[in-house]
Image 1: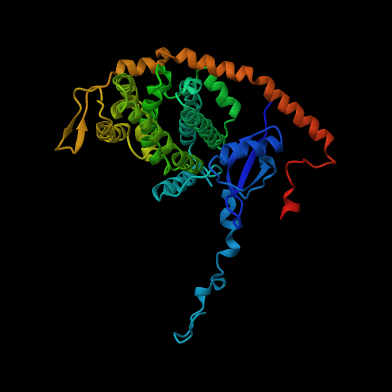
Image 2: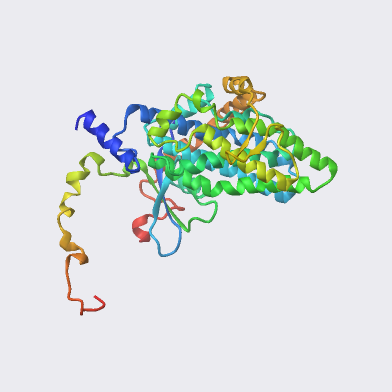
Length: 93
Length: 325
């Protein structure tokens, strides 16, 4: 069968916010993917802008490696403001 | 990691209510159960368009017609959300389509009953969508993340379906004697099939226990059914109509309504394909699939042609993101 490729759909639901992944759909090309995304994911004005990306172009980190992959961030508590103890007298910092 | 360690990690996630994402390790049976449940659910949304589509051209007012079209369009959308969720489990859309059209996969038996009068649009919205909502709200917390995300979206949209159905019945119930009788007749025909939507009794439901252990299901069939009956028993009074069950009465001790015995022979017979409309529904789906083939083929041929032609020029309707941001 002539299979239509899978597309991932990202929607910005309000001016000023990020595009957010909402799901996927099958479509023959980018134009029909955009039109289908509008019909499937924004029937109640959930969006003001849509991105579609063919799923095969998305590269993802793998859950099995997530331990070592995200390890560099693990032991750097000094990146967080709460790491620093300040005297009570200091206000608004 | 060996399977035992992976299984342990999976069990811990379920225990702690951490959702399972598609690329996470999961037991083969968990995957299989989800594929079956989500694809059945998707098929139900798609086949569920048919009984209502039957009344689009004969809706009594333009307003009712617009509402019904919007509702049927929602069902199509719900089917698509669910197919996509199932696809993350490594089954293709084509395989699911094939399972539906060959009769291998099931869909909700409720859609194998005919829609004989306009009042059926009311009864379907109130009872069938009402039952679906009771089923679906706990599924928003189901352990498989894409299913849960799809269900949250669906539940947001579904409550309009139930309300518009109830309002159709309310309008009929306040109308002429004939209109009121039509509303009652629709409830009479849709009540028991709706009660059956929750599936077999817990004792006869082979998958329930494991599904609840995996937190795919959060409540058993009988618990959900009771909730539905309690809800309807109150709402039918506002309509001034009756639920066709002489045994329906409030049980002060249980704090629930007691109800009569379900006709399980009818239930199993419709499941097995002998309902009033099983054949009609399947042949409508097969015809839709076959008659739409040239459109799908044309779309793919056009896409291939455009692709070959436009390595140089950009698509007019879609702006490239890099230019946009």
